[in-house]
Each structure stands twice: as C-alpha cells, then as structure tokens.
Amino acid sequence: MSSLVNILQLRAVPVSVNLALLALRAWLGLSMLLLHGWVKVVNFSAMVSHFPDPFGLGQKTTLILAIFSEVVCSALLVVGLFTRLAALGGAAAMAIAFFAVHNSQLTGQQSGELAFIYLAGFAAIVLAGGGRFSVDATSHGSGPA
Image (cartoon, rainbow, N blue to C red):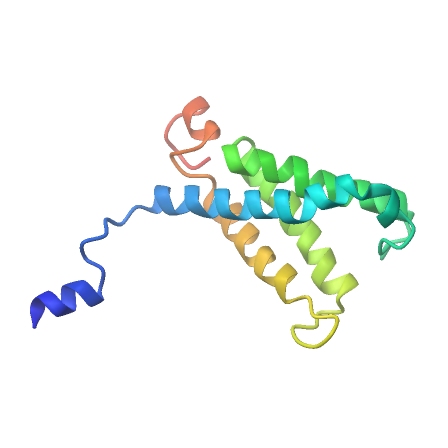
C-alpha cells in the first residue's frame, strides 16, 4: 500500500523549484514568442489596420508594443535575462489584452481566457524570479534572479 501511495504522490520525482521555474519560463516564453509574437511580426502589414488600440496610442504603435512584449520580452524570459522585468512586460501585455481588449471575459466568443492564463504565469515569474538556471542567476550570484 505504501508503494502505491508513493507512486500516486510522485515521490520518485525530485522536487526542484529552480527546474520548475526554468520549465515555466521556457514554456511561457517560447509559446508566446512562436505562437503569438512571431505571427504578429510576419503578418504586421495585414494586422496593423485592425489591431486593437485600447489606449488611443494608434494601431501601429500598439502593435509594435505588443510585438516588443511578445518577442523581445519572451526571448529574454526564455534565457532568464532581466527575468522579472521581462515577465513584467509579458504580464502587462496580457493584463491589457484580458482587461481592456477582452473586457475581462473568461468565456464566450471574445474570451480572454488564454490572456488570463498567460497573465498568471508571467505574474508568478515576476514574484519568484528566474531561478538558478537563468543568466541573471549566473551573473548576479545564486539569489533570486
């Protein structure tokens, strides 16, 4: 019975917060960069005329800021360079997407569910830092990056 409990509680899997932070950074950063940011770069001219502009900065400026967040901040997040600042950029973009563009809707046709989930992941990294397996940690000691 105790071996079944050990299996169900995954006791054979080592606990590593640093490895978990690396996985979270890589997963969020790469998926944001490849599935969202790069699409905006490649389709910039087609997207600019109908890109949401919730703060009146202009569609082109807003799209450029979104690309910066989704490409540059995501790439920094993956390698763990300026990790908290990069995650803050991602969190800000996802907060704008969820609250201003999707009107805080978690269900329905215009759901912001994905932005909400990304926001949670980016916020976790802002709070926790990049962990030991980041450029920040190797260049600034072993403390939170």
